[in-house]
Length: 390
Image (tube, rainbow, N blue to C red; front, side, top):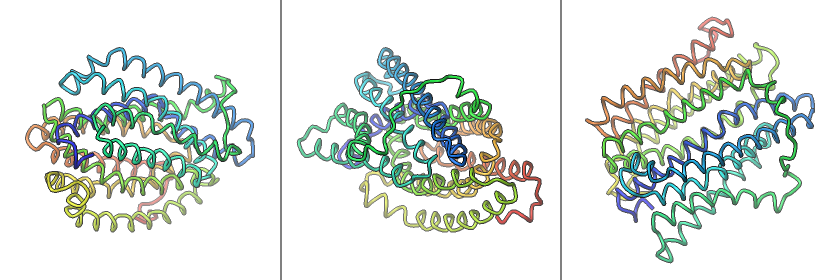
């Protein structure tokens, strides 16, 4: 798509998909982490009936909320189009909105299998829609139907293909048919902070793209998104690491076991840091090979963003430990600080440096997050600094 679309067209398409991603995550309101945690804990007592009840109630709530947000976006699509896209592309907003309930449903089932530590199935549920999206976009280009509207519809509908797995392997499928609102209140003390943190992080993750659009820098949106696409490949691998890390951490019963497990995973963080540095060095070749030379301005933002992931790989073990002992309030506080810092820094840097300014802002935000994660971990686990193998 990046090679064949004009730079501005690609920027408009990515803004639309960003709206979908942001609203999808808001629809889930932090339940992904809460759901995985609850399933992991009840799995230890083999209380499968309670797991099904929690999952079923959560899915029904989230699916209803996401459908409501989808309808609201469709009704106000023209206003959103002018506000974010700076032009009349309300059909793109409508097409993108259709995918919100579908994406929410997919994410809930992925969280369900993550909680069961069945990572093979969760990986399959991630891969199937990606393969179908690749196929759909390829066919659109082959038959010369590669309009922004058709591509947006492909992004919206293809995630539904995750259900194909259950058609062939229905023994793994569980249809949400129970509902008990009181069951959610048991985990709400933990989940409310994850909910608030999730909403703040979602807004923060997209604020740079929307601010670039606000400053009428649609081309810079394209450059920044290309950098994020390459980063997305790296984040996918990091995500696979955290997918395994958090449920494993939730099964540990003592602080001593958690500290030992964190120190072990900090060694993994150092290896991941070395990999990130290597990828940053070869990033100019990656940009040119995948997207062509017209996206060369994405190179410097990509290098900055990749280096900004170094704090992130050290944050993962600390945050997983805090989640394991139910200290979720700190995540909301950190998210608020990050959002304020991100908006403030971006407002200064974006008009002058465009996508490069977004990358610099991302670095500073991740450094802030690492500082909070490090000291919070030390505070709650009451350990000396030299016991942390960082």
